[in-house]
Image (cartoon, rainbow, N blue to C red; front, top):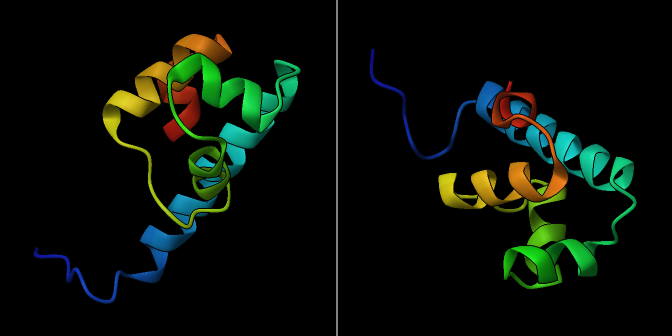
Length: 79
């Protein structure tokens, strides 16, 4: 089955929002601000904000960096 890319199916957008919320929760659990998290992974704090609000999607490399800094398994961020 081929998934249309534009517009994305609603389930994809829902999953993006869920991943963003998991990033936000893990960041808060780690007692980090968006600025502090961004500094630790070498990204801009605006980028972290965009991920948490599902405006953009983190790459696999970004997800690996996030999981490492936040001390959570990668699957917990993207499940």
